[in-house]
Length: 538
Image (cartoon, rainbow, N blue to C red; front, side, top):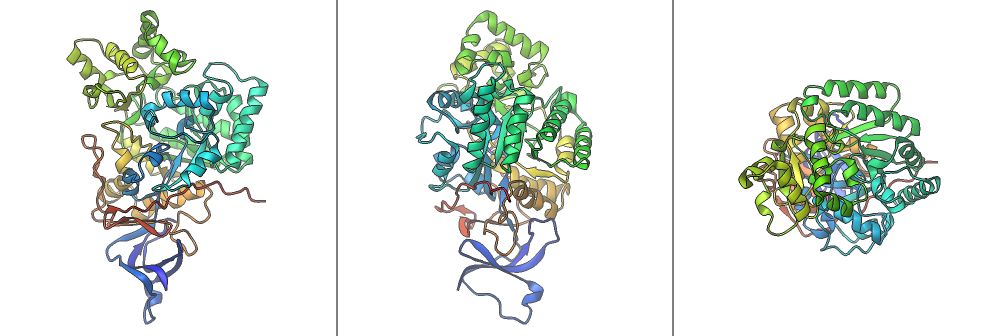
């Protein structure tokens, strides 16, 4: 007999096609049979060792988080209910140009410091890898959900060039090409950049184009956090579209938002730019999260010149009064490149997490609120916190616009990505609620997307971008990474006030045919593994 039959499910298959009622049979980690209701009339229904009554539930492919920051969380927390409970069965790691492979001992220390606000200090992790392949092997020991990996361009640059703002020499560029190629050959699905983060931001377009040519030759895609989401957002999008065209490389635009006051109501301009590129033959996709607030690190707001040389140099500059005043002027008056060319509004910058003990009083307050309680200027507060917490504070930035969020998610190349940072006492609710929020708020409540369209955005479309031939669809022969949810009740439980509240209406999640969520509770199953890039055809 087969392992499992899911009976009387309303199947939404990930293609965007209309739903249908069926029995779905799973065996050996794959979907082996789909018996539609009409075909089953008058016939003996399939049997299995276990039968699950799915009456009233939608069966869909598992959700694919195209932008995740669980690089250490998957190793630190075997439960990982933050994602598993949402129905996420695959996360794409290595985002924004900074992650933990490929590294050497020196580079690893700098990366850990620079992204402590995303992933914690990592003091509880045994970093027993250095290459991309070794990191993927570490994931293969057993994790909560599947994970794919992007070669982080900033980490590669730190390894070869260092943290200085200068052009790479020809020999250094050759070495970076080699490292990117090795990462892709070892299983990475593409390359990411963080072009408002050091040291990736120091790469000129010619350098990025050369690396993207390597990515394209290996069948991967380029995923940039581009140079501005604020004052220069449209120009930054256009820059990445042109760069990918010159390199002949598929492009996936990370967290493709239009934020800050300068971009209110301007999503149609972005979508027109993308439509023109698609009409000209661009291989282009994007992801967004269904919230208006952004999330990053406090140190990321600083001007790039203040970040040159890496974390130690940043701290040195912050402790020098004259240099700190220059930083303040760029932040508050000019609009630093780290803050997307917009003068910082401390009323919108909320501290969401700190690493050091004794600093919890800052969490959940804006920088201006904490400053007022201390009777000092916001910059004084921000500067003190950066120094005392060794650049680790994470922040929410309340700078988005709901009409832009809705317009962009409706686009035909849109996919879902949480950009979920799990670190901190009060993280962004998107880390725990992105996928049920799409289904509850934007399908059932607001009707921005149809159910079938939304599921395609979260499953089939991202699987196609990742070139995964047997995932992302409810189809015979595909892997049984599946979600069962109640379309009448599915909703994000998380909120800005209670960000770790679990979702409702998702009683079952399967990875490789094994239940990781059963009757709404996390099991002890660790069915996730590294998902490696499919070889280039021919």
